[in-house]
Image (cartoon, rainbow, N blue to C red; front, side):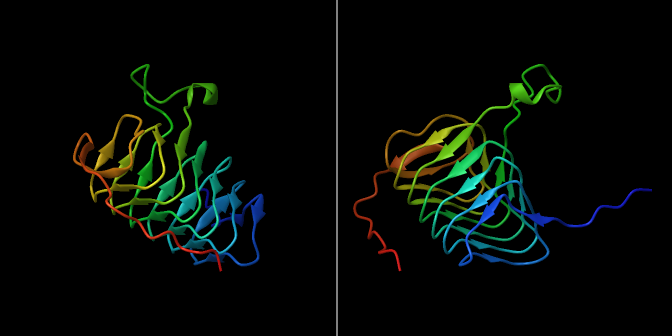
Length: 159
């Protein structure tokens, strides 16, 4: 039987970041004032922008970029392999990117496939995002659908 230690080996991690243990971070870039809750995995080639909060039990796979001032709820799963051949990709070159812009909030237990999400978007808990989102607003469901616009959003000032 093989056992592996939990890793805390990000490629870049701002001194102001808070990483709760146990968590598994390797080869990723963590920005200023980021918070990562316990029991999270953040893989290589992931970028997390300043002031973003990632709650417990979330999985952020390779090739995901998350902007600044985002909120990732408990148990959110990001997917980079769409199983396009009917099974896991044999080659990492078949994996796809996900880009989350600034000021995006993703509710607990949402699943995010390889997509682009623009600024000022709220994804409801349990939603499955299967397509790019180019219009700010509230989205929910499986698949996630536009519900309504965001009337106003107070933009936090960097501290």
